[in-house]
Length: 464
Image 1: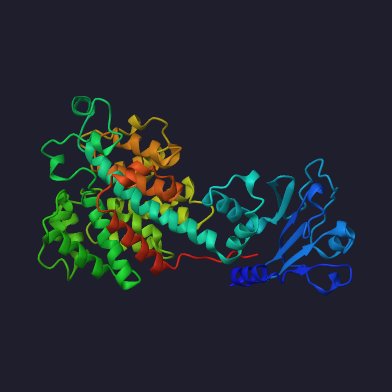
Image 2: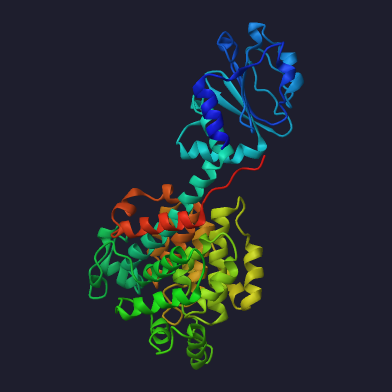
């Protein structure tokens, strides 16, 4: 790997010093980063450091008269007007970005690795002004894909933990309206300890997730074991889970899973139950578990649709799952997440009724979504709308979590989906520690994170 080669070069002290005699012997066309010391440091060997994408490290110091600045710039694909004092910031050359390293040191870096470089700064929790001793390490992380790998694992872990945290804290207000919340949790629910242990909630230990996350784990375990999507295996996991008499299982899901030949013909059974409802059953049981599908590297739409139809055949359910899965996928893998218009286009492929709820999700006030309405509580499009509301409007994981939880209604499912999206958007590292520490059975989640990461091989080399 590039990193290993450059690391060995640096550690061995065999970096190439450029002189007026050898500078034309080297090809600088693959330079990715140049660091230039200030005038006060020009007496140090290696005042100018050059790293290439092919595993070469060069040092040059024009003040030593080993090479002139003009000679150096004649072979580097970068044109700078450098004065020894750097009295003012140099104008960026085309295709390069400027970063101040602190203590009078300056870095020029190719635009192609600028974004991952900024991510690397965040991952290492470094301030830009204190990068003097860190920049080479971060550049190497950019070149060998480590930064993207770390970022994607952080986002994947954010999805899995986000779902479980939203589910566990959302249980605290599940099925409540404003009046009941004022009575049982007058100060709101902001911590697991705020959950009122009534007859419904006392069935779970404080910090436990519910059926929403249980079913997500059924999908995740099948993905890990099969190293791909096998709907029949996922259906078997659902059936085995249901036969264990889980708490909180939804009525629609229960009806489907309890039919005798479900495992043999899961989608046929699912379609039959939906048709028996005269096409009216569109519960959020398919949506509540779909977050992990967004972690797949490809075929997300087909996988989300097939897995949803294992229990929820209504096109509104299918479209909801596809939108959330595609959004999570784009947040993990792409520099630009899917847009509002792209969500509308997905909705058009499944059911025209979906578009109105996507539009409502842009509302600035969560109360406009009427999440406590008993007639629509648990409706897949209501959960879709509040999850997207959190995505558009919450400036942090915690802000979105608490807004959705304290809106009541089907709060555990609403928060599970919303916080899976927020986990993908902001990453595991942005989740407040108290929500992680208070969550029970974290070891199960860590096993899933490791298994999915290994299966997916979350690494990408940056193209230069």
